[in-house]
Image (cartoon, rainbow, N blue to C red):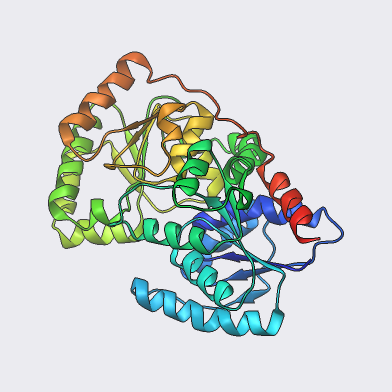
Length: 364
C-alpha cells in the first residue's frame, strides 16, 4: 500500500503530522509527502516542520501564490505528472485549501482513490472559497474521515454513501495533545511582557474581515476598546498588516498602547499563548477547535462557522463583526469566565491511528 500525503499550506501541517507518525509505525505502509508550495516561506514553514517532527517533503511543487484559479490550475498540472510517475494506491488530502481541491480533482480523474481528512465540515456559505473546496473534495473522495457527527450528517445529506464515511475524531487535537506539555515550558507570555490569564490573543486574516475597510475598521474599534481593559497580543498575518497600511488604519494603533502587534509565531509558541490566555479572538477555523480542548473562551469574529461543535459542546461563541456584540461578549468573559465546554467525542489524541487502521482495512 503506497500512500501519497499532500500538504499545501501551514494549517495542513498540524493535520498531516500525526498521520505521518502513525503510518511510520506500520511496516507495510510506504508513504511519500508532497508539498505543493501553495503557501511557503522558508522561515515559518521550516519552523513548523521542525517543531512538529515532519520529515522533509519527498516532492515539492513550488506552486507559489496567485489567484484561486491560477493556484488550482498550476497544482493540477504539476500533480498530474507526479501521479502518472508514482501511481500511489491512495492520495491523502487534508483540510480545505486550494491544494486540497486541486489534488483531489486530479487524482479522481486519473482513477486514484482519494482520502479526505476533515471531511464534511460546512459553513453553508459558498462565498467562502474554502466551502467550495470542501464540497467538491468530499464529492470526489473515496474515504471521508470526519471530526464530528454533524459532519457525517452533512455528507449524508449530500448523498455520500455511508460506507465511505468514517467518524474518527480530530487529527489537529492529536497534534495538540502531543505537544502541549512541551509548549507549556516555553513561558511565551513572559517573553511578550504578559501575565498568564491577563491578556487576549488575537488572529485576524480572513478576506471578509481584512479586505473590507469598513469591516476592518469596525473590528479595530472594538479591539481598541478591549485593550483598555485587557492587553491584546496580535501575531499579525502579512496580508493583514498590508491592509492596515493600505486602508490608513495604522495610525489608529497609536491610541492603543496595549494592542501589541507581533510577527507570526511557530506552532509551539502560539499554543503556549493560547493555553495561558484569558480569551482568544479569532477568525480561524482550527483555533476554535484548539480552544475548546484547552478550555479557553473563544470569540469567533465571523458570521458563520464550519465547526458548530465548538459552539454546541465547546467554549466558542460566534460573535460576528459587529463591534457592540464583540464588546458585549468580551465583557461577559471578563465577568463570568466564559462558557463552560466539554471535550467532543473522539477528540482523544488517537484520530490518526484510526485513520491508518481504516486505510489498512480498506486497501489491503
